[in-house]
Length: 130
Image 1 (cartoon, one colour):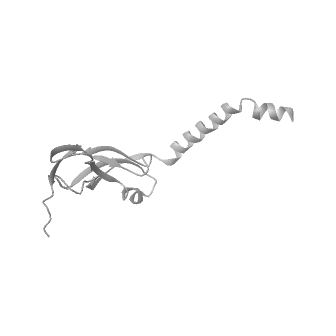
Image 2 (image 1 turned 180 degrees about the horizontal axis):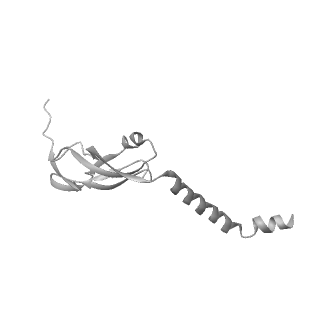
Image 3 (image 1 turned 90 degrees about the vertical axis):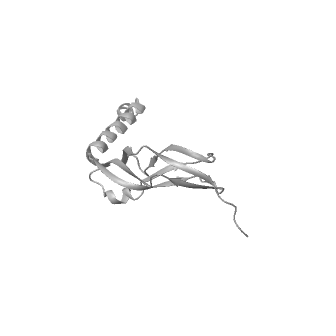
């Protein structure tokens, strides 16, 4: 019993770390290689103010992703979004950065967005008639 404790419980923290590192390396090697894939997505405007209208000079962007070759790619590609955030902006013309969001970055990692920014035209909404 004493040898069991000495072998398995002595410096148990290092043994747990070694197991985690070993499992991580096994996971990376077995899951497969990443391949580049290009998709086009519509740009969504987030955090809109109801008092303004928004117009983009470009409606779509091209996104280059690195995806794991072995996985069913279509499921992950449906959840890739391109957005521009207009929070706190008033009337005017702005060049805003396009943000790309994926649900699982380690399965589908965005590497490039073309164009990286889009022009957004913000105008006050006209008063509504009665």
